[in-house]
Length: 102
Image 1 (cartoon, rainbow, N blue to C red):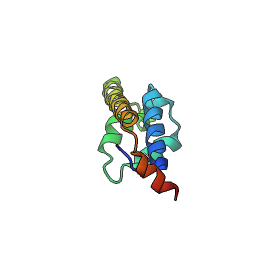
Image 2: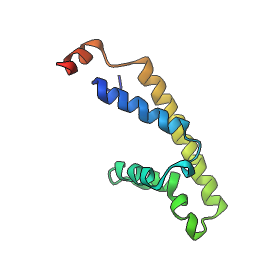
Image 3: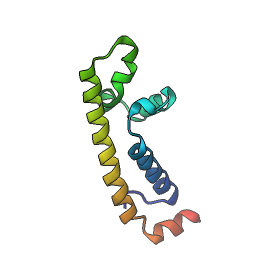
């Protein structure tokens, strides 16, 4: 299982669904992009590869930057889909769910 508690399991599946359903980071608000950036705990390289071109869009990012960013975003979406499948196939064990309710 990817999570040992009911709440974190639900949050994990929800976040995977959100990433999987979002076809482009352009559809995300700047607040959500900032939250994504901040959640990477110092490893912002992935953020810049996936979404950095959006922040530079006002500065005239090239089509090549956008294309590269969309390839990385789609890779992230594919990984989210695979992890969601694994999370749904292997939910937390019932004993862990019972312990978290106490």
